[in-house]
Length: 338
Image (cartoon, rainbow, N blue to C red; front, side, top):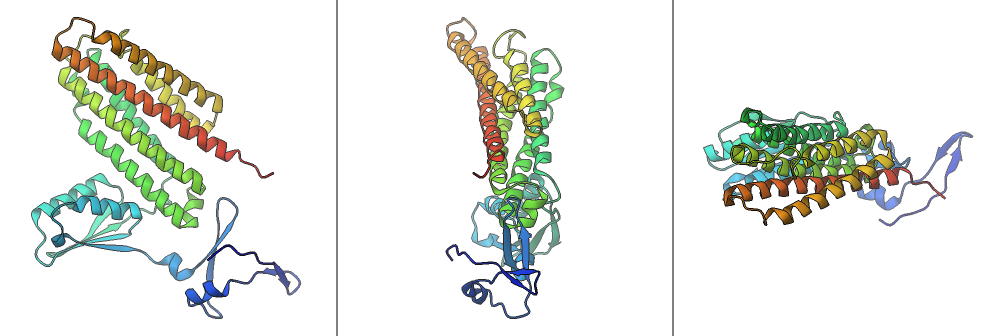
């Protein structure tokens, strides 16, 4: 239905009323005496919806017997779409492989638990209200995990024990889970004004938070790659603290910390300054990489050091992307009607 304009009317001397489009009333089978939901959006606009549509929970059923593979992808898709219940069914007993994939899905997401486990059906339900956890909490958690991986890698290169990096896989899994949670919350906010309001974001900011989560996840991928490289090659690498790319790591960590802090303090000049500094670090790393191949080093050591350099460079590049998203959000917040 196209946008319509309707005049406000006064009845009883003090009550303001507006009529609803007849087509919308008919489509939703509303009658005299029915109640509709009115929710105020963060933009100040009002959204009118039927109570039935506002309250219904959603369920997705997946027949695993019809799949050769890809069950996890479908469960992730159901999770991101905001399904309250995911039902895995099969005409024959559910296999051990499928049960293992379901356990992996539960490990890699947040707030999902098995409600019932039968021979031919497993029902997974959401226990987490999407509006209960602020988006910033998950962003902060992703930042802490990424910083921890990077700083622990730096410490191992400086001579600390490899034991600092014993749980790389677990930390990567937590980063990925937080990204999925943010995207699920954003999907809920776009569909339900009540969630949007409780999360204290408008639609634009919600979408930008989803973009930030994806950038942080990619940053987490490179932090994980860096940690694996360091753990596997710490004895052969001979980098000094003042050598690139090693000296770039604390600079990256400080830049990322500045960006996360200013998601809340909203100091545009500091965000832009961090973006410029990270861009300069990338240029310095690229210059060092050009020189790296002209040196006389064992091939294995040379390759490992280049991979470490590449990971640090990519971390800085994604941090620049993060800064750009923050600037977009802050500019959006400053929009004023004219």
